[in-house]
Length: 514
Image (tube, rainbow, N blue to C red):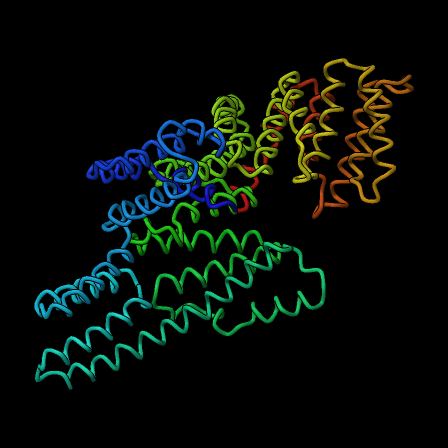
């Protein structure tokens, strides 16, 4: 990445309050150089995408090309200094490090009383926030302080310090072990969430069977507990144990409630924990308290633009899915303008796969609501998306497009698309039986019918249900939507009514089993 891009990304990561803090900090210094830096800051802040040529054009009257590089370095330094001041009371680690720097200065000046106060304050904060790695350094400085003071209680202090350091080192060793188990599991998941080779399976088994993951009763620190729980989330995910992953995600939320002082930390992130729980709930169709979690996320004040994007990418995404799955289509459609607005606003910063997924789910929403023209508009957006990401979604939307042309009466276009789909399926070595089934019955519906339209729909539904039962674990992701559509054709109802009936039956069944 180009250094200039790093400055741009730094500015874009600032929250409104951090930007205000920088401007106040910079306003203390009235030099011409700094005024130029403030102008550069304003230019970069307004840009959606970094363009150095445009920046230089806007600055050409105040700075030479040779001075431009130095100006960027100066601006970067000023922003970091202002962030240190801004974060002093909100980031305990920065506050501890600042106090330890103060202690070193006081020691050099022989200011014994101030030195003791700095150590005491730093230790209190470190203990409160489980900052064991810093606490070990503080304990060492505290020992030097006691020696320098010439106190008679040095020996008593040494005995207490020895016990304290042994306990600290034990906690740090446990936390480190759990941290690296978590990182190794996470890296494996990022590379490939499916364990394909014997070596991958052996390495996974070695990690999941580590004795340190057998129980959390001896874990002391917040982070060691967090690493323990997150490791189990990943283990469950590898095993496709979504129920288990949901339980551990909920335990992480409970952990933050037990240690509320960590809710403002960047890592581990309380917001990310809530997002992960949303995703875990959605995977198993468990929506009890779902709206409360979404509301909690929306009420968390985003610190940076990245946080704002994260809330949109995840919270609004799962809110849309929740509203669709609970058949609250009107409310789901009210989110669409906000989704489009945020996609336009953050397009260059969003994951492309998430944009595709948003468009796909909106197309499904409009299809289920019988708003076929709107559904087709979003289906075309997915199909035209120039990305190799989420090809599965693009395959699914191709099937949806066929159904939409059928509903809209575009028979000539539908025939053309069916020929294309036939060629496409012939080329693919792996394809869904559901895709072939849809092509087969749409051909029957628009061709010379030997059966009535309802009888064709009944046969289609019968084969679809059989296919769904055979491939229950790996079903085509639009199976349910197409099944609801077929029921509506047979029963002279709407797809929305059929889905609502299914959800009500499912909820009744769940209550009875409970």
